[in-house]
Amino acid sequence: MAISSTVATADKHEAEATDSTDTWLPSLITETPQEGFALAITLSQKGVATTQPDAEVRKEQRPEYAQDPDSLIAVSHVIATHFQTVAAANDYWRE
Image 1 (cartoon, rainbow, N blue to C red):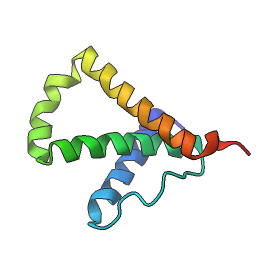
Image 2: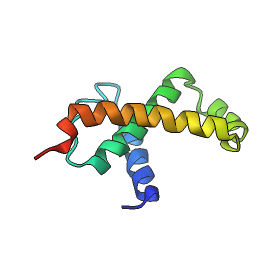
Image 3: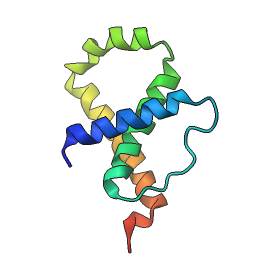
Image 4: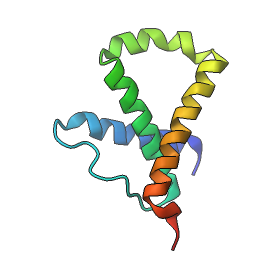
């Protein structure tokens, strides 16, 4: 599965998360590492949305960090940290 598919899956998770006022994260358990990575992206996105709840402000600020390598590396680090947590929760998808 390509990265664009992973991001699309993460976007789907994010849309589902914002649709509900109840529990948006019932579990860290996923079927595959790919789904786990998508969940890690969703967790990262949710963290940003929680920190800055105004979507318009986030959209306005995006050009500032989208071209900044340090910001992009920092985002990758946050996603990797979340993926590490999800992988551990899934016992690294051992069979």
